[in-house]
Image (cartoon, rainbow, N blue to C red):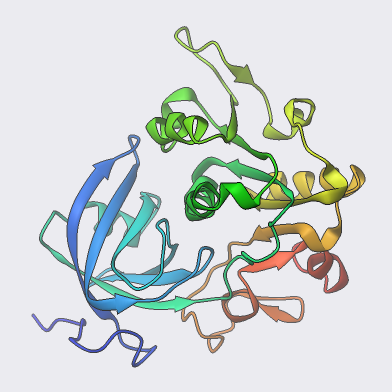
Length: 279
């Protein structure tokens, strides 16, 4: 069978997949896996950018980078099994090849948190694109104010990176978890993540927020933070769309006047309001 993956220099042709080899697989939940993929040469990418990940015979799917980023030959991707391509990815084993195109998109701005309080709001699998932001903030914590993570999941068993949240706490981040539905062994918060604002110790007028999760959560979180006095330019989110090409050619992710894959996927609340994206 002919392989769709080519051996080439990283990023030299955005239309051809780069060859990656699965180096490690971690089961995070019943339907979420963390894959560590080694590439033949280093790839530079930023938190918030995404890759088109492919399996021969199944197709391609956009997946955000879940790891830190500068000049690495390994990439971590957090993948939930939801469809044909992600099911095919979940069937792969350590040592097998996988196709990688990218990175694509603009990524999160990392130059503006200095001296500010930082609020991170995540829902479900939305914690994955925010994980490299969290690691970046930990590495630069002496330049920041207070950092708070509000993370909501459907159930306690579906909390992703549960072990790492303890490490984040030890690094000085205030981590506040909530679930939609608890169980007999769970004694934490129950309810929407946007019901936890009272737990946040931050100067909202001098803060920045990074948000990722379900659309309904993103909308509610942005509106609340703006109401609390946060600048709409400092409320940053990453949006999902049915991206097929990653380079603004297919039109699947065209929303308002923007292509999510090339103009985004990261937008400020100001951009979203002014250009009628998402709302």
